[in-house]
Amino acid sequence: MPSAAEFQALADELRQLGAVIVQAANLGDQELALWAVGALSSAAARPAWWAREAADNEAAAIAAAAIVKAQQG
Image (cartoon, rainbow, N blue to C red; front, top):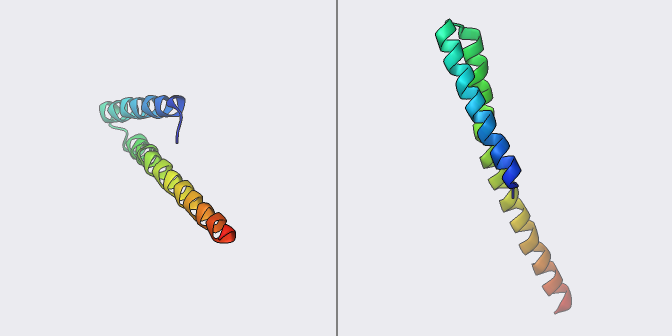
């Protein structure tokens, strides 16, 4: 599970990317806007990665417990 600092860093990154998108729109800079949208997509995917990692850890713990139980009985 991510720490509070990791969640805060993500929130800060998303806010900064939002500002870059606004700046790119104001400047009419399509290349900067496309870069910012790509970075935003990557940052927005991070919570899903964290969730998959947590699910994998949970599945590994369940499997380990089943192995221990099978070995004991």
